[in-house]
Image 1: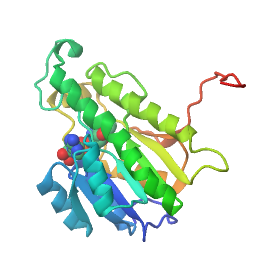
Image 2: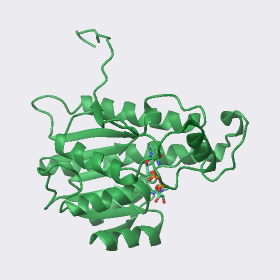
Image 3: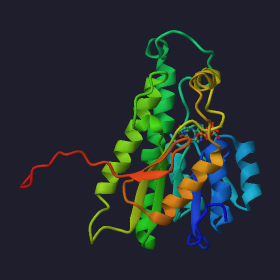
Image 4: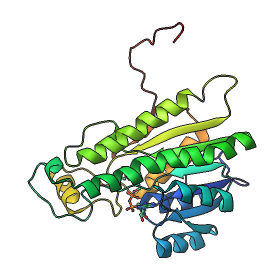
Length: 263
Ligand SMILES: NC(=O)c1ccc[n+]([C@@H]2O[C@H](COP(=O)([O-])OP(=O)(O)OC[C@H]3O[C@@H](n4cnc5c(N)ncnc54)[C@H](O)[C@@H]3O)[C@@H](O)[C@H]2O)c1
C-alpha cells in the first residue's frame, strides 16, 4: 500500500491511465496496480507504455488522446473503465532552450494546436468516451491532471496556463452536472501539482526553480494524491499538491449567485 491510508481497494476495478509511459502517469499506474486495479496503460510512446504495462501486470493500448476515434477504439477494445486518469500533457516550452523572449511572441501555430489537442482535447474526448460505461455500470471516477498552473498565472508558458485553467473549468463544470440525488454516481476531480520531477520540466524551468529555491516533488507524491482523490471522492475538487505543504482539496466557490428562475 503506497497511499498512507488503509481503506482504498481497487480490486475488480479497471483503470485507464493516459500518458502512462512516464512521469506522473507511470507512478500512478504503479500505485493503482498496487491497490489491486487492472490497469490499461495508454500513451503514444509504445515502448515506454508497454514496459510500464508489463511492470504493473496490466495491458498497453496505443492512444493519442487528441484523437476521438482512437478513444472510441480503446473504449471498445479495452473498456469499460471504472477509473479514468486523464493525465497526458505537454508544455509548449518542452525541449526548447531557455530564452529571454516574452513566451507568447515565439508561439507557433503548430505548437499551439499541439498543446491544445493533448492538454484540452485529451481531457474532453476522454471524459466523453469513458463516462457512458461508468453510468451503465453504476459508478466511476474520472481524475484529470491539471496543474497549479490551472489556478495561478504561469508567465513562462501562458498557453500551458490556458490549457490547465481550461481543465479546471471543465472539471468543475462537468461536476456541476453530476450533483444531486438523481445524478449518476460518477465523480470527477482535478489534480493540481506544482513542479514534479518528470520529462516535462525542461532546462528553463529547472533553472528557474533552482533560482527560487523551490523543491521539485517526486511523481509518487502526485500518484498518492490521485489514489487519495479516489478514496475521498470529492465532486469537482481541485487537489493541490505543493512542495512543503499538506495536500488539500479545494472546492472554490466564488461569492456569486446565479439568478434563480426560468433560464
Ligand atoms: N511535471 C510537472 O511539474 C507537472 C506539474 C503539474 C502538472 N503536470 C501535468 O502532469 C501530466 C503528466 O506529465 P508529466 O509531468 O508526468 O510528464 P511526462 O512527459 O513524464 O509524461 C507525459 C506523458 O504523456 C505522453 N503523451 C504526450 N503526448 C501524448 C498524446 N498525444 N497522447 C497520449 N499521450 C501523450 C508522453 O509520451 C508521456 O509519456 C501532464 O498533464 C502535465 O501537464 C506536470
